[in-house]
Length: 362
Image (cartoon, rainbow, N blue to C red):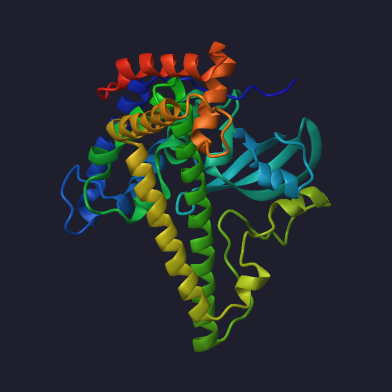
């Protein structure tokens, strides 16, 4: 019988209260941050607060979980996505937010027991009889951690020390997320925000790889390089017992510097870092604009005005080659959903929409 993964479905208010409690408790640890005051948690301190929180609530070993490997790694391993990998946690590292795990089975097929490093964010505890661990409490704490870093935390937050992160962003980000889920934010804007945040995470990873390459260049220049490399979330176990499957071997291929990056000079890497930082800043600015309901409404009204203006001028020639792209897309959507068969019907429909929303209402 397949193990039962413990999962949660929480409301906006439940999530908000959970995170308020976490940051309030974590504020007790702020003595080690020069210049910080109680309850003022800067972006650069957020991960350390999570380390403090997890060090208290997370059982370091002796529990089982389903390891949900990201789609990219499943492709690398030639595994069907999603694949259920049952593991037992042997130890945890809060410095890297990872755990040393013993692989028990893949898709309920037993395998030779091997040790691997998995991200805590990828581990979903299963309902099991433990002597010292309550699996539901454990799963709940990991759910809070996972939801925060997957849904609320943005890549540029770590460098934002301009204000207290929870006070400035926690409630605003949660409201935006739930508005996107419930449809309060237009599907087009929600899709754009998700795309930008996803792209920023890819840029963040590339920046980290470039930074590691620059440090490697410095090591070569100063003291030579012995070829060893530390990799977050993967380990090399020379004392593994038994034959390790080729698929699991592929799992721990380090996400390290590619051949092109490895051959780049320190100067070119520095230039690339500057380019990535600029791109990250552009994304940050756009996401912050789209996060504002008043700005989204203004943008929607402007687009509506342009569509209506064009239709008023060119109502007799709807097939003109000069029709703006957004007019064509918008028209097709309305026709498909509401059955508006002509530009005149469509113009009447837009008049009705503008009469309701033209004054800046959402």
